[in-house]
Image 1 (cartoon, rainbow, N blue to C red):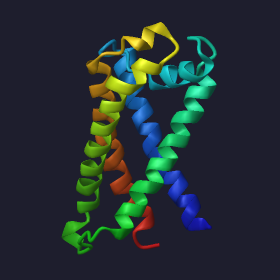
Image 2: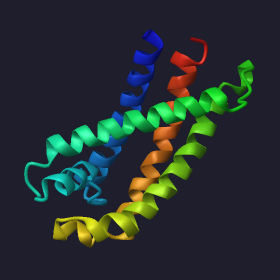
Image 3: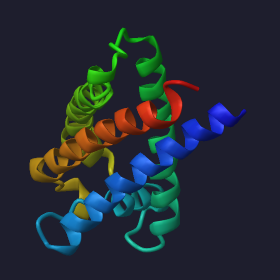
Length: 153
């Protein structure tokens, strides 16, 4: 039970870091990559009252993918000797990159086509790429946090 709670904690921490990345991009006007707003608006069908739905969906998605990453860390043959402890971070970044490419495809092709709010139907490749890039640090953090909290548990 403790192991599962640690898995949830690690997943939520990594998801929180990605949300901070998105918030930084939006608050500095680099990109309008508000995944919370776009996910929330997808289900509320309006660009108001989006926060609760979007936040809950993003946290649940982060937990789901975090648990998937942990499962992969457990089954992949990653060297465990002292000098290779950083390998979890590198493998996590690779998983994040691949996850990001799939999300980029979904966000640039499928998501805009079916989004009920007009603003998100025009979501460009820039937003999809910034979202995809945000999953590389997610994988990095999942690898580091896995090695610190879960690898020897």
